[in-house]
Amino acid sequence: MGYNIFVQSADRTDDGFKSLKDRADSVTELKAASKAKDEDEYAKIACEKWIDVRGFGQVFAFKGDKLSVGVRGPVSIRIARSINPIVINEMQITKSVNSVSTGKGKSSDTMGMKYNIGYALYEFSGSINVQLAEKNRL
Image 1: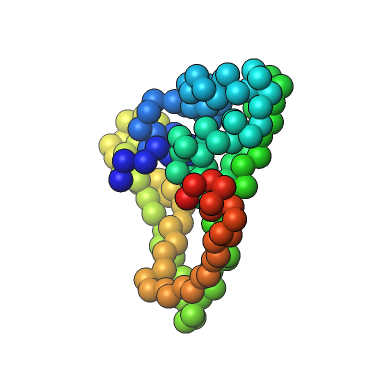
Image 2: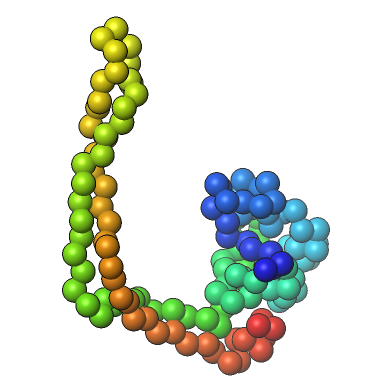
């Protein structure tokens, strides 16, 4: 949707950075705020740059940095609970390629179990702290 995301999984990254520290270090304004030890400015810049920091908060505490900044996010989501009982389906999965050369053709080696739930209905709740939303410009 056009917003930058700070916390990205390695397999879904869209900016090429391999770690949160690398992503934070790429923002020159954050480096300047860190060098000046200005926590408020650091938090403001991080909130402007990344929507997940603005909404859920983030702790910026990286090894080697002299400044640690905690950004409190206004959005809280509680643990979900199942409305209906769930049934966990399990199946044994195998692979059809050889792990090692046996010289006897293909072998099927058991890899493990796979679990899924055919249907589930969960209820969850959350809240938004108005003061933190205003502070983070959410």
